[in-house]
Every structure is written in C-alpha cells, then in structure tokens.
Image (cartoon, rainbow over the protein chains, first blue to last red):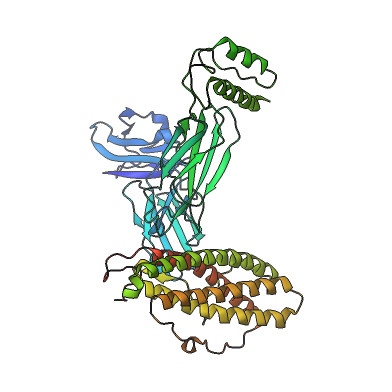
Length: 335
Length: 195
C-alpha cells in the first residue's frame, strides 16, 4: 500500500505498519535509510514535532523476510494563510483579471477556487494557463455602479482560507506602462530631448478610450524629477534639459477619464546634443577658469568648446559665447 | 443618411462631439464634487450600496460596443432628460428640508442641473444633425414619484448622483464613438440604422 500522508509542521505523527500487529518485528526506513528503533513504539513509528525536513518516503518491512508491508509518502506542511488577491483591468473595456498568491508557502499542494459576483449574477473567471495564479473575466456590462465581489478560497489537505475584494468597474482600471519609449537628442539643440512612446499593446482601443501620459525626467546626477502631464499624443520635447547631461526618462499612462496611473515604463537614457568635441583653445581655458566662481563643472580636457573654425550662429565668437552660457548653466547644478 | 455624410455635416458632427465631450467631462467633475458634498452633508455612508430606483436611468449597458450612433444619442438624451427632472426634484426637496441652511449644496445642485440641461440640448442638436428627429418629451415624463421618507429621499439622491456620474463617463465614450469617421455608407458604425 502506498499513499500520501499530510501532516502539519510541529505535529506528532504515528505510522502503523499496515495490518501488522503492534508487537510484530518490523523495520522502518525513511527515504531508504533505516530508522533507529528509538523512534518505534512496537511496530508503530512515532515522529514527534515533525518539521519540513522529515518529508519523504517511509517504508515498513517485516522483520525477517523484509517484505514491504506498508509505504507512505509523508508531506509536512502548513494550512494556508489568508491569500493575497488583486484584480485589475489593463485592457479596458474588454475585461479584467485577478491574480493571487500566498504570503507564505505551505509546502504541500494547494487548490484555488475563485468566485466573482456582480450584483446577483455569478460570473466565470477563466483560469489562465500562464501564469497559473491568474484568471480573467470579460465585462458583460459597462458603466455599472454595481460593485464586483471576488472571493478566493485556497484549500489544502491541512485546511483552508479565503479572502474577498470588492470594487467597482472604474476603480481597477490601470493600463500597462507605455512601450517602446525612445529619447533622442535634437540636432543643434543642446537643451532639448525628443521623447516618443507607444500605447501599451494590451490596451485594446486607444482611439475610443484614449490614454493620457505622465512623463518624468531628471539628469542622472540629480534626485529630483521634473514632471509633465500630457493629455494627448505619444511624444513630447523636453526643452529645459541641462546641456551635456545624461538624462533618465520614464513615462506612465492612465485612461483619460477613469482608473489609476500605470507603473512607470522602462527607463531610457539620453543626452542632449552637444557640439562635436574640438581641441580646447587657450582662450577657452581662460573663459572656463574666470567663470569658476559661478561654475564648478569643468569640461573634460578633450571637450572642445571654442573653435574659431566652427560656425554656429554668427561665427566663432558666438560659439565661445554659447560655450560660456553652457558653462554657466552647469553651475546651477552645483550651487 | 446622405446629409449626415456630407463633409460639412461630418465637420459639424465632429465639432459637436468635441464640445459635448468637454461638456460631459466638466459635468462629471462637478458631479463627483457634488457627490462628495452630498454624502457628507446628508450624513450618508459613501460606500453604501443603493438599489436601483424606479425612474433613475441606469448607465450600465450590455454590448455597448455594438450600439449604433442613433441608439447612443437616443439613450443619452432619454437619460439626461430624466436626470433633469430628478435633479429639479432633488433641489426642491433640499429647499423644503433645509431651507437656506445648505445653500452651498443647493447652488452646486443647481449648477449641475444647468449642465445637465445644456447637455441634453447638445444631444438634441446632434440628433437633429443626423436628421433623426428629436423624440418628444411627453413620453419621457416620469410617473409622479411616490412619497418617500427623508432617509429614502437621501438614498435616492445618492443613487441619482452616482448614476449621473457614470452617465457622464459613458457619454464621453459614446461621443468619441460618434466622432469617429464613418466607413463606407451602409456600414457606418457610428450612425448606421439600427439592425
């Protein structure tokens, strides 16, 4: 006879050797290793205060013949704690999904049962193949004020537990983050960055259910973000970037009318356009050092700021003047 | 149908839809604020469930995406006409119950009532544009309301404002659908004849 036996952590377990009498001579093994007689009471195996490491295959053999008389697989675990359940609509108005997990493992198999009630109507939440702890449901009605009530029950051989969440249709709408975020410098514009992105592919109908966006950006060397909210379009030009500084940029999305903001998108990095590095001239070095009282950022030695040969604006002087402005702008970061 | 598809009519429709969307958006924001004030001043529990009440148009709809443009306009118009009457009734009840004491709430109710009336008119304009004809209001007149207790009046008011807030969102969505350019005649999703 071979079967599975579930016991709680900390329990005392007594195993009988099948139909053998109490006083029969037997040998017990655990995962093939003989168990010391001190754990026996007659032919019964006594395991006190079991822990997870004692899970395994237990076998009982008749004393002299070594015939296998009984075999069981002991699984030590715990009854389930209250599960964590969340529901969200990232594909409004098609439907929503619910996902769950246990706050601590039980170490034994669990089954999950989910029920969804809308008013008096029972709805079926179809389990996803992947991930396993998720199910999805199609909206049968839109714009309802009646709340949805979702109850998840988790059961295992040692007990059960459940949790319920209640929400209305609008509250759980949360798109996935925008996709394909791209940030590029703008040629000849040292303070601009062009950012573009796409609607999340999971959002089924952005034309009828447009998203609005929140853009945040900061130079890598600063902690404070700048924010811009955009009610339409999937691009934006940052016009106040610090010249030459590498920026980190992220975008979030929200339905124009309901729900909450998505998580932030994957971060992208970009540095505004800077003039082609040229060899530093003596004048340029003097310009930098005389500006030191308001500037603590020094261009790396290979950076070429003033080049009489460069044509920017109205000529080389414009270049040097521009460079002076750039250097002054850096100073803001370090005051 | 030909009139509805002419370029000028299409432009006018888009313009009316855009303005309607803005109206509905503002109306919704004001209704949400009014709802908060109403719950507080009436001593209600914001999370209380209110059963559907007779005469309060429910925003909930099945197969919303399959509705024709005409259905959308007609259902919206019927709803806002009903809300116009319901809000007028609420305003009257407010004045009876509280007199001058809750002027703020009364003013907010009156402001929303004005917006609801304006939006209903806007919907009539859209229906006229589509040469659908505007349904008369005689058939829409709600039956005389049963005499409700004070508490029932408050709950009803809560239900009215909640549904109105939902309708405002639905109206924005409906108008966006209407504003979509029509495909080939005979297959227009926004303004096709209802099947």
